[in-house]
Image (cartoon, rainbow, N blue to C red; front, side, top):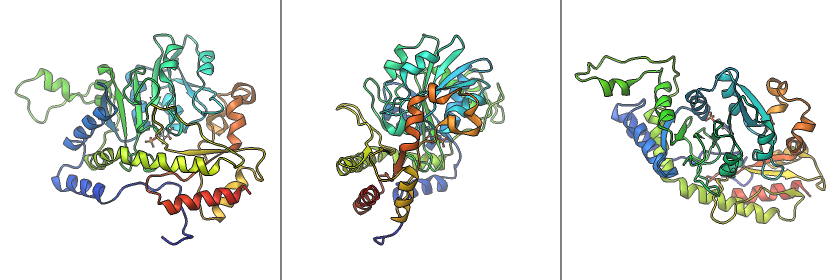
Length: 385
Ligand SMILES: *Cc1c(COP(=O)(O)O)cnc(C)c1O
């Protein structure tokens, strides 16, 4: 790579090993959901641990939709989501006919404000969907403890593979009903497109397995019939087409074996950025105490007022230095579709409103070379001079 080539925002960290895994799946003759998907589910459940089961799907969005459906959430119900997230978190609430209730985040962590959740609870609240923003684990136990027993926690863990919070390995569902990971191309573990739902609740696991494939209950058939004719199946609900193919799962299995190695590389890059930016007019991301694990999916800087430029000029300066940037996120309440759900955001979402214009994400992926990391540091430093 030449010294001034463009540094992309996120390159998927996939190569020969993943290609061989996918090729093996193709050559096996079984390319859609089958034995490789099942192995991936078992290995993933073992990795995030502690007895949760895993249901492979074709996106995190699909997994979150299935979780809410399995919990029986529907019209008349409310689901609390942070404004600082991708639209998928709120969109699935709409897909089941419920109402997303958009709440504020903590100014420092950008994770959902547990105090704001407590204030937003009503008798119609059926679930809360915390997002482990950038891979920084939410204290799900603390959140759980503020909620009535009949309010579910469904974790949006799209950024959190792997992450360990104060009391849980994200995905073990010790304090939640379900947890959903994303394997989208830019995420920390990728299958191109894909996702994984984990849960300790066998009712949710069973229902999700049925609903991810057209509402076909093959297990019931397996359980209750002997002498099964191979053509028989029973549809028990109007399900979805959310299953993961064996080709995608084959990539996922290789990525899972590399999860720790990739995380360590991202953590090293994040620490290198931290050290390099200490004196700059920026607010650095929150880190985790010893014993917890940050997945470092994203490195989000907040530009402070002492700096020479605002966020938009900063992005232009970075682009002219041939370094890509991104914004995570344009909060939900700023989008045309979601705006009407939030009254007076300055008053109701003060932290998100204050932080939104300052946030910018710089490249962070395990595929980055040391030289690229240095170039990003130089570009950020020069841009803020
Ligand atoms: C990427 C992302 C999703 C959606 O993941 P898909 O696998 O693309 O459906 C959901 N929530 C957050 C916070 C994300 O960043």
